[in-house]
Length: 70
Image (tube, rainbow, N blue to C red; front, side):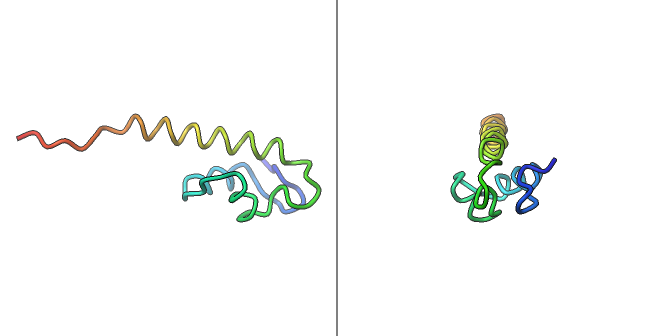
């Protein structure tokens, strides 16, 4: 779904940016240029970004720790 129509940014692009290591919302806006023109998308872009970050943290905490069992 398109989040930013000014720069044709989709929710998938935002999620992928988080997966690829985007740490902050400000960094996301610089990388994808969302929220930089009219600003209408800011609320929705932030919502998708926050959800992706929360999902990332959840999946990281569910990964088993690397333990040597000898």
